[in-house]
Image (cartoon, rainbow, N blue to C red):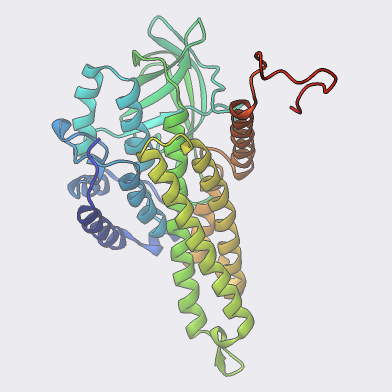
Length: 387
C-alpha cells in the first residue's frame, strides 16, 4: 500500500475540502432528491477521489484508510450523496482481499475512472447487528436470497453480494445490475438518499475465489462512516456558532449568554474528542495494529453518541427553526441518524469493546499465570492460586 506523505496529505485534504464545498447545496437537501448523477460521479473521478486505495499500476493513486476517511469526512461536512462508501471504500477493499487477479484487473481501473459504480449487498432482514448472518445461498454460480439495505442501488452498474456456499463458506460475488432474477424495491432514507431491498432468484454471479472474512472490510467501513459523522458534527458546530453570533434576544446576541457559551464549548469538545478517536482508529488500521478492531468499535460508538449530542444541542440553540428545511442543522441530524445505523449501532460496538477488552484481560492473565510445573506447584495445604 502506497501511503501519502505529510505534504501530500495536506494538499490532498485541502483539495477535497474545496471541491466538496463547491458541491454543497442546501436547496438539494431540501428537495429530498439526493441521488448522485453520472455527471456528478464523473466530477469526483476527475479529482482523483475514486482512485484512492487503488495501486498506480491499476490506475489508482494509492493511499489507505486515512485518505479514504478524509473524503468521507468532507462528504459528511457538506451533505453530499456520492456512493463513495460502497463503490470505493468497501468495493476496492473487498476486491483487494478476496478477488482474483483477473477480477481485480478488470474492475479497479474502471472504478478509478468512474466507469463502474458498485453497490454492496450484505445486510439481510434478520441480520440485526450480526455481521456474519447471511442466509443467501450460492450454488453452481447462482445466488438466491434477499438483502435489505443496499445504498444507491438504482445507480449501481454492479453489486458485490454476500452468500454462503453449501458447506457454509462465505463468498462475495459480483452480480451485474439488471441481471435476470434480480429485483429492487426502493425507499428513501431519513436524509433523502435512496436505498433498496434486493431479491435474488437464481441470479447468475461471479464469485470471488477467496473465502470472505469480512471483519476487516466492515471495520474500515465503520470507521469511514464515523469520519463522515465527524464532518457533520463539525459543520453543525460551525453553523450553530454563526447563528449564536447573529441571533439577538433581549437586545444582545444569544452567544453572549453564559449558559449558551457553556453549551457551545461542550459541543466543540465533543467534536474534538470524536475527531481524535477516529484518527486513532484510522492509524491503527493503516499500521495493522493488533488493537485496530477495539479502536474502531470505540470510535464508532463514541462518534454516534457525540453526533446525537451535538445535533440535539444545536437544535436547542436554534429553537424550532433548527428542524426546518431552511436550516442545515436538521439535515445534518438526519444524516447522523442514518450513519448511526450503518455498520453497527453504538450499543453493538460498545458490546464489542467490552468483549475485546475481556479477551485482552484473559490473555494477560494467562500470560502472567505461573505454569503448574515442578517448582511452580503450590505448597501442600495452600491450595491452588487464584484464577
